Structures are given as C-alpha cells and as structure tokens.
Image 1 (spheres, helix red, strand yellow):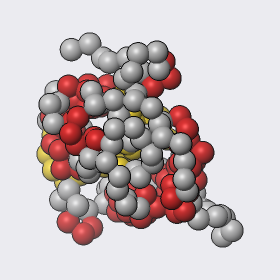
Image 2 (cartoon, helix red, strand yellow; image 1 turned 45 degrees about the vertical axis):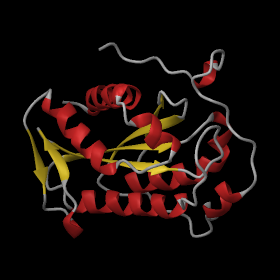
Image 3 (cartoon, one colour; image 1 turned 90 degrees about the horizontal axis):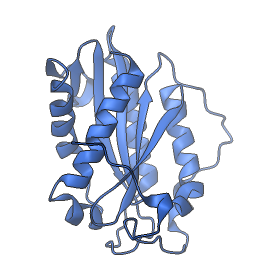
Length: 211
C-alpha cells in the first residue's frame, strides 16, 4: 500500500469515528488526550485491509502498529486555544509537540526496513489559530524530513480540529539555530473560535465519509 492510499483510508476512518463515537462530544469539550483510544481505532482500521500486530521493538516501550510493510503510529495534541463551549486548560502544546518529535525519532530508529507513517489530531483548532500553530507545524515537518498532509474534522460537540499525516523520511531536516520558540504563542489573549457545527460556518464544516 502506498502512502497516499494509507493516509486516505486511515484519515477518512478516523474522521468518521471522531464524529460518530458517543464519547467524543464530552472528551473534545474537555480537551482530553485520546492516544490510547486512537491506537485501538488505528489497529481496527488497518485490520480492515490486512493483518496487523503490535511492534514492541521501539525504544522506551512504545508500541506502534505493524501493517504490511508499514510501521504506523498515532497521537493526539489537545490545545489551549480559545474555543467556544470548551473547558479551559493549561495544556503546553510546545511540550506535546516536543514529545511528538521524540516519537518520530524513535519510529525512525526502530523502523528496520519498513516505511513509517504518523497520524496526529490537533484540537480544538479553528482558522484563527493557523498563525500560532505554524511554528509548531514547521518543527514537526523538519523532524519528519518532509511535509505534512492536513485535513479538517469536527466532533458532534461543535469542536473542530486538524488531522495530520506524515511520512517519516530516512533523515530529518536540519533546523536553523536561530529559529524562534513558539511556546508562548497560545498563551496570548485571543478571540474565541465559534462553534464549528453551527449552520453557515462553511470554513469549519467537514464532509463526512459515507458509512
């Protein structure tokens, strides 16, 4: 399976599950991490296409999903961005991004001869947060050694997010020493994003895959 086919299949199924799962409205409003649930769902999604098994040989005990000639992992990055009808939190997105980059490094180290793909969901997230997110995204792409593919999704709570897929290249991109730190970006006062599923908010609506 090629990367484009993999990301399309996994991406569409994850978006559908974000929308349909009955626990998602409460979890999304509370900005709860979903890594464990996402790993179970990722395994189920890949199992629809072929045999899957956990890969335990990654450093620090991390278990990715082995599928065909792929090693695939998934993560969640809740933000502290202002968003209507969500609970406030003190999430440190800069630290979570740093952890994701460490995961990418471990996946690259433990890949063997397999190709590696990473999926991660960022939420709450609206168009007005693009500028604050840009530096984080760039750092992740440098860790991957290539660009991320972005898609939009929504929960039934009205909270919206971005789903990213990245192919882990053989080598990361070297970062310039003078790159500014993005950590303070989401701590600045900002206007609150509107409810994503409200009628008329065309930019935040997402076409759901058919069941």
